[in-house]
Image (cartoon, rainbow, N blue to C red; front, side, top):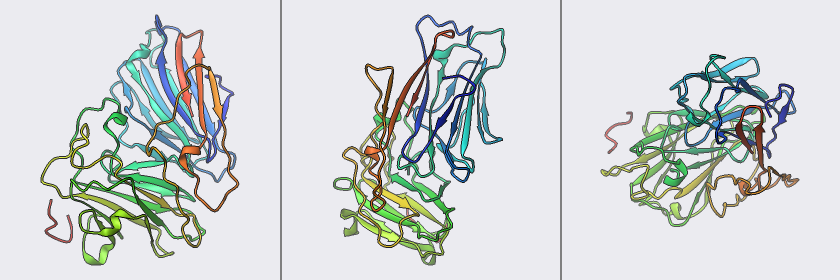
Length: 348
């Protein structure tokens, strides 16, 4: 998989998961550079790089992880480096990843590296935002896209992340890049009976950082609004290019990431989309929202492809392509995996 001339095709229905794993008795001395190149078919398509949990950890001083979007460097990480963003959507139709040695004379301890990345299309139904962690205070591009937004992840899905206090106020902005002029729409759906333990309220705002009446486009209070029990849709005016979604926790008690008390993980989903003309279609709820992509148990290569000709309904993310490729560098002894508070004023 490290071959320099190999390119991996990315579509709306095909994504890749990248991990690094150590083989028993690996000395790391043979490891030099591993390069992966991912590309969408058309030049006007956009690819995104997603950092999954657990976050990137480079505990070996002799390794560097570099990512490029076209000719532009996205980031370069060395020992103890980290990425703040969970998702980075580029304006490029290709992404290149390189994992390489800093010094050719020293070995690399692969077991000291943690890398969990996804490369996906900006139109992939697998895009996800959680209104609790480092996804907050960021802007997410829409270009004939859909993004599933949840209140928080299940503690077990964070994969041994140290306990942190969930943000009281988490806001994210969605920016429309598409030129067709379709409205930005939000489809709210409860996942079971909503848990109002953290006394949360959802807002859609014209601009960040203001709860002035004129800035509020939509408000949903978990404890007081009966709409919290029903799926419903809100769409911005067609000439609106960006809006902000705010999840406000008003409980005096702390909500911890490693507990499910006060606010049940995945108590709701909001699907944000910019490409549905006319009435917003029914969006199918996953049987197990937030389910992680599966990994093969027996075969070295497992590919399941899925395509849909149905342009009316948004694709159910449980049917999106799962691609898993075990990449074993026999000369290196390293195994890499590709798988597919009260509001007292109008501002704060």
